[in-house]
Length: 320
Image 1: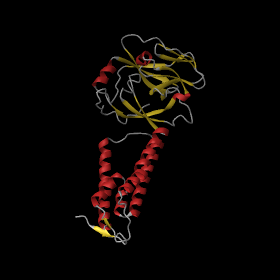
Image 2: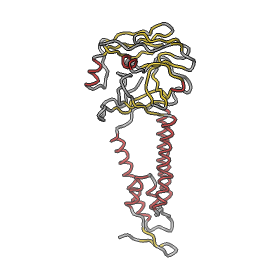
Image 3: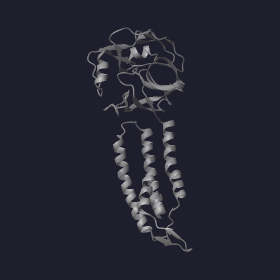
């Protein structure tokens, strides 16, 4: 039976419910304590959790954007934290039920909703939007132009601020895009260079990039389908100003017509995919302006096949 506590004015209000306090603590740290009547403890818990969230966010955007835990680990952390805070809120509700002279509880649903939106949901959404818009972005890989390093369905994190202080150098991966979409490509030449593509091999200022054949290509974290696709390719280690990376071509057949080259303007870069057969055939090669650069790809976050199933083992793979 719900008890009621008299107030000085002679009116009655329901005592705080431990169950409601526990549920509110799951919605936002400290909200359950505020509802129960211990506003000071509620604010303290909220500030502590907000500081931890902001510290984690700062570490994320300033450090390497590496491996993220699986969803079940996030769920475990949330449930563990929620259970402890909810229990504390329930105890607070029971202790504060008859102390209305010294505590002011947030009993009204509109007040609770306002606090949740203003101090909980809105700051989290706003901070995540800020990080996505200014620091860390993600791009979904379409097609096989970056095979074997990237596969269709890979979701790649990239650093939006990587090229604010200095432009990319030859051999480096970049994310380029416009309103129509974004893609991961490799820079082979920078502004002022004269570039051409001869049978899939970039030539910079008249000198072709050095390539060395790879006899047995072993790429980790591939499934049977990707390994069979790799078996019909021939691979080379290509070197560009000290950066070495793997490029492939289809063994059978010839490459499509070489893409146009020329001398690059100061604010231009020449980019191409690592699978030269696919990149040239699909037009993933050519000039891009400095303004089209979106950032530097860093790590694979998720990878899904066409049927929606997840490729195991690719999460956390560095992109370079």
